[in-house]
Amino acid sequence: MTKAPTRIQQRNRAAILSAGLDVFSQFGFRGTTLDQIAEAAGLSKPNLLYYFPSKEAIHAALLERLLETWLDPLKALDAQGEPVEEIMAYVQRKLTMSRDYPRESRLFANEILQGAPRIGAILQDDLKTLVDEKAKIIQSWADAGRIAQVDPHHLIFSIWSLTQHYADFDVQVRAVLGGHDPFPDAAAHLETLFARMLKVEP
Image (cartoon, rainbow, N blue to C red; front, side, top):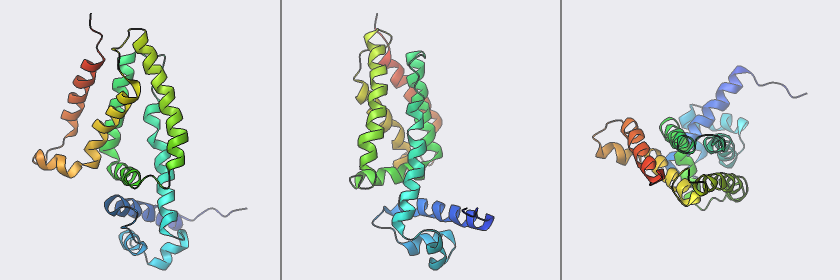
């Protein structure tokens, strides 16, 4: 029987993952070292290695945890719901993720920019399957005249780009806005933008 981790072990593991998220999201996989993660976690390098044998192991654990929640907003798109409400709810869920999980968003973006060497198979399998499934739902709504005719895949891509931008380019956005929180106005802007795009013309 595997012995349950102690509270100290749980706390140290959580500290390492949080530190790894900070460092990886700032410097990317190649620019990150175990020494940086250990320092950020407040642990010695030997202590860190007790929990994770390499930076690859820490990165893999972070990506696995991230992917468990990254697809959830799209999974919640309900074919039985009101189309515009369902799409707008998805937009807001994605924007909320950018607000609440900026480090995770940048970690994901860094992985993609490097060619997705560690999650490429998941993108081509789990992600593609899910996006294709939801694209069919969106297309069925358009074909039934419940929303305007749009390319469903590119609609989803647009939602990704217009929401994740606020996490991945947070420094730029806040600099332009003089340090103001962009999310309340972003939510209103995206609702107007997509509502107009999806409106069926008489």
